[in-house]
Length: 470
Image (cartoon, rainbow, N blue to C red; front, side, top):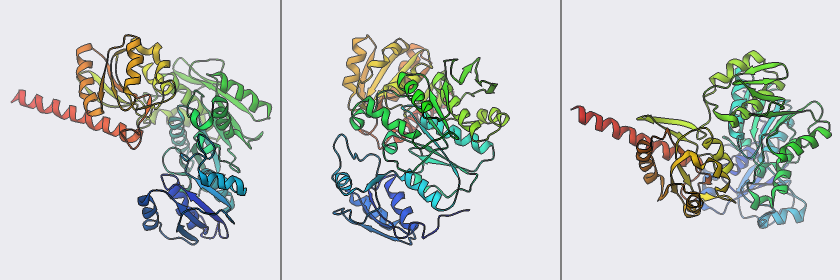
């Protein structure tokens, strides 16, 4: 297995600010490649964990508050720490004044791979929704084609925790807008922008700023590369036109529009040459058809044979916390869509079912759930959790949707099950349309708790059945 040389970044100095899921691996990896790294986090536990679990380093790794950036090559900030809006972190201000680059760990991965002499290709996926499913699906398809793959970034392992790949390997990186606005060197061989709807506007100022951040995924691409862009919204259509005007080949994708280069027809993804593959049960709905189109377009560009794609997509098991069936009980399906942290993502799940008992709530994004009104007729009852449940309740009440504020999942899951049985609903859907940080460490923890509570219902049902049989 290839490894990065211990002197790859010898003589370089980096400051790493924020020791979370991205910052801690970045600090360790850069020090292991010979760099002198100064790291800091306001949390004492995070600082202690870095030093106790750092492993072998050939450079130096120190933990100290950042008082100066003199002689520093770059500042690596965790994606969630703002460097401009809504309020720039003081160290980011210091970096701008000193002319020190503020970089994403993904950019430093690219630099490390090239410094190591590898010609491994890079595939980048972004968009407001669907990027995690598309990232996982593309990695799966490449593996089916015998390609050595390493995926991560905003999904799964942090970029700088990924291994060195050989020349024929492919890095598949999910890229958030926070990561994209901190790139200086990374050039993707294939890159995808799935869609754009309002999100993270506090960080980017407005939709123009948000779109500009997302568009940076196509920076430095050329005539030999491929940009894959959804055509379901005006923002993406305008970006596709501008990228085409730069001389970068563009292929459009859609789950519904047959004018797109890759689209769904009679249940199959087709391109200009005919059928590419038929998405399996793990990819329900038009939005997942769009994700499949994008992954297939990128996989073809990366050299996977059409026949391999046709077989490979059927073996894709889906993504955790994204419309994942976790159980069925008495004809009611329990579906974990915890990754739906905004209304647009939830709309994609609501559109897949007929009669729904809906569990929603948490920290609402701008606009709340107003955009979901067209789907309200599908909801037989809603159970609301989290900080902004009252805000969601107001919208539901204004449209006559039956609902209850129950506070947490511990109350929501059993109540939703009882309602589904009483009302003949086919699914209990956790699709919160909100962030999770008021009650959970992240959407993953929220989804796991939903699954655990569903499992409790199954055990109770089995126990009651045994008692009745006895």
